[in-house]
Length: 192
Image 1 (tube, helix red, strand yellow):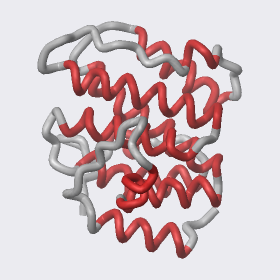
Image 2 (cartoon, rainbow, N blue to C red; image 1 turned 60 degrees about the horizontal axis):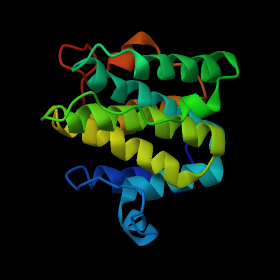
Image 3 (cartoon, helix red, strand yellow; image 1 turned 180 degrees about the horizontal axis):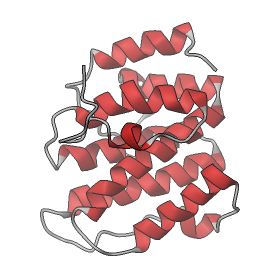
């Protein structure tokens, strides 16, 4: 599937909102979600192609997971991501109940927000992929973005999401190693 005109428009609107707060939590009114272009982009993609959005949430969760790994060697979120990866890439049926659990952060200090948000991104990706409810994709993206916000990488996560992850998700294929690592410090692929 190519990028529809509606998705292209929302992509440009989202680029214009790179400095806006993307933090959306469960329980927030739908009207708040509708104010943010990235949220409207995910809802539109859901309406057009739930499989492409499933790929995108998987990519987002995998990227967000690096914020967990940077802070802890606790293997629980990694096991969840591995189960999710096996499902997305190979069709292996996971234990959905276990996969959709939010693993609690092992910290109660300054590392709490990025680790909990990284864990949440994986759980929300699993929930979206299993339940196909668009707000879950928004929570997934918001969680990963919050995790990256705490490690101070400017807008690299958001740019990677728009420039790399979205187009690959529309192709419904696995990312290459360079696409997975794009926009990270030292990567050969940097934002334009």
